[in-house]
Amino acid sequence: MKGLLLVMRKLTLMAGALVAIVLLVGVAQAAPRLVIPVSDFSFGYVPQHSKISHTFWLHSSGDDDLKILKVLPG
Image (cartoon, rainbow, N blue to C red; front, side, top):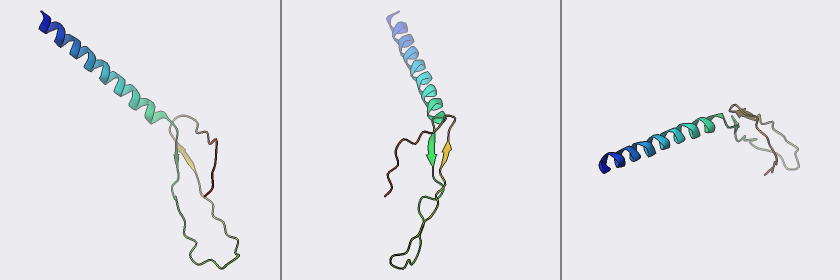
């Protein structure tokens, strides 16, 4: 009888862990994530004192809104 109770407890714990893993994976997929298709750009030769710029497109993947709270250029 004790052996059966021990097996039942282990099965219950394993089932609970499996449910938790499935729920966490579902939440991770729905979370917003920043996607930058082109993360760098080479300007090639640039003469001294030239003003140059390049536009980077940012995309959000996931089901929720992506909030950008702070930008640090570098």
